[in-house]
Length: 195
Image 1 (cartoon, rainbow, N blue to C red):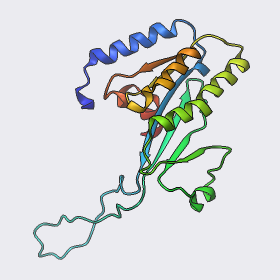
Image 2: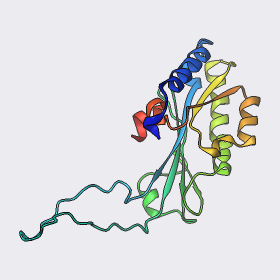
Image 3: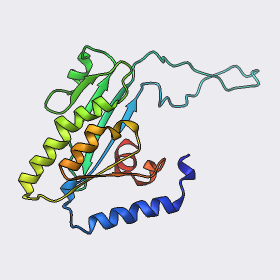
Image 4: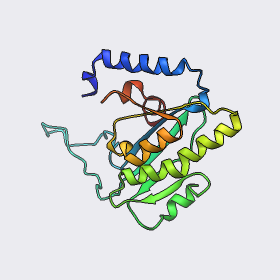
C-alpha cells in the first residue's frame, strides 16, 4: 500500500506542516514519535549453501527459530537533534540479564511488559504521561517557550486514545497524523533511524 499513497496526500501533509511551522516553533518542540518492532528472525539474510552438482533446483529453505519473542520500542526525536527516553516493550515479565548487560537501565530506557511485545494504547499513554509531557514541560522552562508543540505520528490506533488526545489539547501539543501508509516517505524515524 505504501507505493499507492497519492502524491497529493503527501503534498497536503507538507503544506499543513508548513503552515504550522510558520508560527516559528523552536526545533526542540517539533517531535516525531513512532514504534518499531523487533524479532530476531525477521531480518534473516539470504545464505549460500553447498549442494550436490546433480541437484536441479539449487534453492532451499533454511529454517529459523520463530519461537524467539518480539520486542517493540517507542522512540521520539526532535528537530533539534535530541531524543526522548524510549520505552522497550518486552513479552517477558522478568527482565533478561542480556538487556542489563547491553546497557539498558532506568537511566536510558523504560522497560515494560506486554504479553506479545506489541504496543497498546495503555502503554503509549503511559509513555506520554511519564516521558513525553514531562519532557515538553522541562523544555518549556529550559527554552522559555510557552507556545505550541508539534507531534508528528502515524495512524497506529494506539496513538488515538482519549487520554492522549485530551492531554495534547490541555498541554498545547498539536498532534499531526501522517497520511496513511506514507511513513516511509515522510517520517523522520522511518527514514533516518529505524530504516
